[in-house]
Length: 321
Image (cartoon, rainbow, N blue to C red; front, top):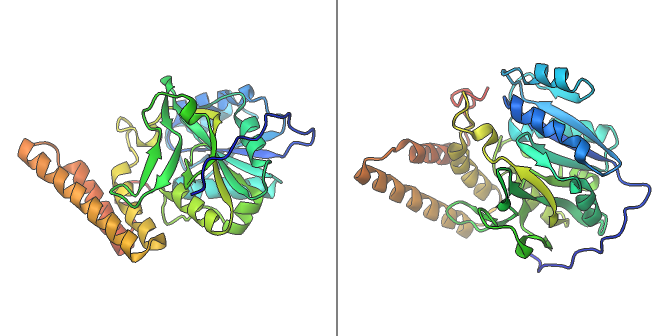
């Protein structure tokens, strides 16, 4: 990973600004979606379009969207394609309609007025930049960082999210090259998407952003974090345990960690990840047994890990399709 670089000077964007497509993915998140779309008019950037991709929601999301925002373009999937498949459909649509950049947003997000302006400012400073990532601040407390950027460690969780739960400040208002940027708020260059492709749909959801950034860097593109580009992130979204069908985060963190390691890691990196992951889960299981606490969360991680080793993804069993 390269050392931090100075931010490009804050110059005005040229009159012929690049065309940016904002892709907002939704799965049974009606209220979050309506709130997210309502923040689009805040954007000061003059040349953008927004596309909502709905992953076969059953909560009235599309009906409510069409009632509240009848002009909003929406692509409705026949089944839940996950973060990867849904966004890939949105990316393909954006490129087919002439987008120079594609910005991906979760539905539980609000946009800062200068979000796209800041992302484009940095992206246009170097044609080698394949993607620029925004800083995620916590929606309920914007003084707290939900996540800035990521480091690939091959540790017990494969990666580390820099800035998580930290107070926002100068350390997170930088522009620098990084291992990967968070999929919520990533703006991808057309040339990079055409060369690297979209997300690997084998991930379905979680760590697909790490995978895409790793592939882009191996193709010679820079991945850059811009701490001046801001989104407010609710944080739970599809994984909120209070939802009728929450997304099984722990399962996918276990499954996709080993899926990524097998795909990209050296033998030593794979062994490091497996050893640290299994040691942590074993310790948590033992601790839960002694204290008579719930075992299910840790068993979910183990089940995901096993399915990753075996190359399985039982979406119907997980109630995701």
